[in-house]
Length: 144
Ligand SMILES: [Ca+2]
Ligand SMILES: [Ca+2]
Image 1 (cartoon, rainbow, N blue to C red):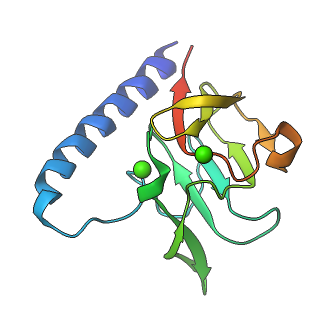
Image 2 (cartoon, rainbow, N blue to C red; image 1 turned 120 degrees about the horizontal axis):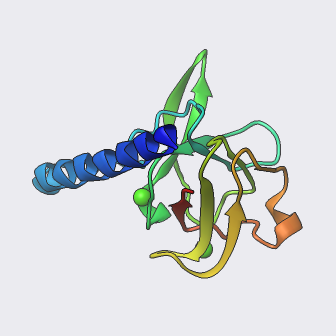
């Protein structure tokens, strides 16, 4: 329970940090990518993949209502670098590496339309199996 609350607080703090960062960056060039994304997929994150095997990926730790301003990361040598490829409507594989919260993928920007609930630790090796290939446009989280 404590861990869950701590995690939820971390999400809230990250969202607040994102809000202030956005305000500061209003006059600067937009930097594509969800808050905290770096191409590395760690516990607590939702990892989306563009292809069924290998290829580009992107990691989400907090809610993101719009994938159109998020870019994938690709393996450059031994490190992940930002790709020009946009996440919106292109993800074909997904892993929820959060072991206590469910990630909900949404068909439409803003978090509406059809959705797919990814329970803690759940992996979908082919989003076509749940009729969601190249559809994801937003993510929210449900924590116990
Ligand atoms: Ca976004
Ligand atoms: Ca979509």
